[in-house]
Image 1 (tube, rainbow, N blue to C red):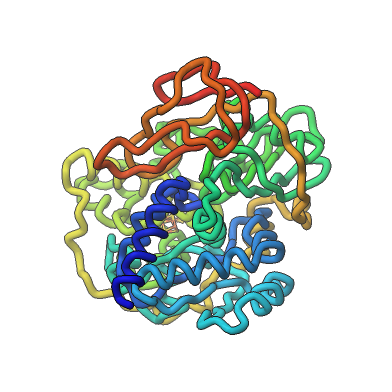
Image 2 (spheres, rainbow, N blue to C red):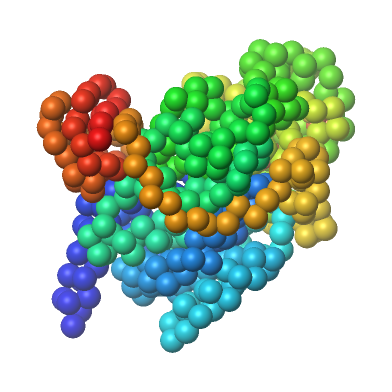
Length: 447
Ligand code: SF4
Ligand code: SF4
């Protein structure tokens, strides 16, 4: 019996590895590695909180059975862990679909209010299990694994032998028809925007995977990857785009001259409120307006999760404390001093619950309320002429091509393998066609 369970476990881990499943919520950590752990809780993260993004909600509404199936498999594989799904109370359709799908399972549902960043891993772990991840630690340190709901959908498909070739994403903002759909990996951002009818304005800019933790897309010919959560179009002169366009030097100079140390950035920091010693107002001192050394101030950045709330919501002067934290972390890393040496004890701040930032207020502050739209799921038959598939779309080492230029490939065929003994993820053709180029960092397939 035990032998049988062990075999089933190794078989699923191998299938997930072969299917190239990685964290679809952002970081792209290879899922087969997470599945090798032995934990008490396996948590599905459906608490999407990036303004205008609805892909997790839509996935839960339309693919609840697959998500639940993936969660059950993952929980069994990691030592019969307790499975739970975190979802926002406002997503009533998703809750109804999930409740129907979890009947006769051990899965419990956990409900979140509509605040940002409810989907942060540390928050999910604390809200569902009451456990606090140690500073700089992983949920694994307190017996938990967290996966985005789309990752669990992919685990379910992997078990059936279906590799990851498409990405579920919301295309929103200043587009004709905001929508959520499956997009072939490697398709150009500019072509993906056309799936939503294209931009409604002549001069626009695009944010990838969210306004708060996403990236400003500098080249709209770049391909979508396994971690692209969505695309949001905004006017090129929108305040957010202007802010994201600043260089580090400009941000530092503005911060140096304008920060009055009001500490609002710290008082509203979700990690600070959860009990971690993150104090962005102190990190701002590293910009040079104190006689003390930057190295010491930068230690207050080490536990920052880069949620962006301090920069894009809290700071009344519109400064860049998040970016100061990122710079501080990088500077410490360059000195080989990035290991947390402060207190290990974590104690939730007494005012945490009353200082939460509702997503509604956040949207107002960001100036994007007018772009809120349903962006419901639409099944589309997308046949791009060409895809450019990056060899590194995940945490770890870039994959190595296993096809040659000129070779014919079918959709779903393995085209790049994990280098032996390394952390990484396999990559598959997202369309059928010919391999027309293999470069250092990408494989081009034309239909
Ligand atoms: S909120 Fe802004 S002005 Fe206040 S301390 Fe933080 S960075 Fe400085
Ligand atoms: S980005 Fe700002 S608000 Fe978010 S965790 Fe870091 S310091 Fe705190």
